Image (cartoon, rainbow, N blue to C red):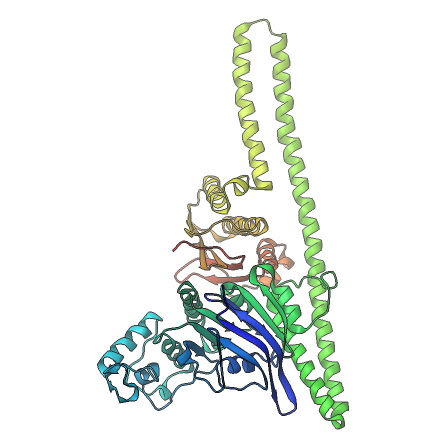
Length: 530
């Protein structure tokens, strides 16, 4: 397959400052490529070059086998561009902005000489906005009066008005709320199914990992990494963003990737101060003092992380020994005693001369053996759910929920995504343990009468796990970080499992009652059913 977009040794400087340096890559039809990097890495400049708004100092861009000459009109080539800040004509109304440059009119093919069909454009504009969940008071209202988020959604709606071969997206989610971010990610998936190529620039790694096939990481104007999404992970991308030369053994896994943004911002501040230091030696003393303070803050952050890791390791060892002790007690006090009892019964049968007594004793022994097998299966199931290997995560959750309901008398409904599919072994087992611990927490603390467990794919690479109960709900001043001090490690263990998977944990009260635990887990791409 030939690439739709081919970038060859592209370079761009502003004055004597080089921003893009010898950048080369390809994008194929229907491929979604993520672009990430720290502030100042050159992402936005590269996007402006590809949109035809900047001219490079060197290099070429080929689109549909055509060598592009600057300046070029991206829209005429079938390239839609969504900028970080929406580029709208502020004093024009909503409909005019949506169809700007692509107006509906007659006769067709007459360009600016067409007679505009305002009725058809208004009707189509309403349909487009409705399809992405946007409402405005009037289609004739000036976009200048709208919020930044609605302006951005109108800019996205504009992309939907013409035939697309490729969409360039430059950090638009910064101004969007979570629901509209999800709508944009949904549009990216729709475009991909239609064979449209996407270049998606963002520093939100959740979004990058959720929808892309490949991730390009820029560092100091150069491509530092270009890898398939399923072949890399957040830690590797973060290291590349920060320009870290640490090897895999040189850095412990950070307990929760939420902190990487803070580390990245701190590193960027240091880099900025270093640049100023090189340009203005007169300010050396003050800047060195600031750098020292920044480095000290980083060291404090690393020290806190290490202490958290030590505590987690200590707790893990303690819990493992506790589980071994519990398992040994169950085997010794129950299984072994039952086996000894059966052995005594067999010895008594062996010494008995009455056939009727033997038959009665054998029936009792068979019953005892069946109970013994059930107990052994229960112990093995607690160690590792047997159905997860043969039948998958969904069957394991349904089986466990059924047994949990029988044990606790609390009904548990399980709602599974039709396209759940098989996930990596570690991911499946971790998700099962999260649900297992969540149900255990409901049983012990929630005083609930009903539980709902739901697994839904929000994207082919992002699984949302929701455990919802109708119990007493989380306390108003609930603080997850203080639970270990009180000896409660269940939710802490869940948060650590989620962090190790690179996911996100959210605890909230239900809309009317009870509590909701939701977890978003990234994983290699799963092809969902159409």
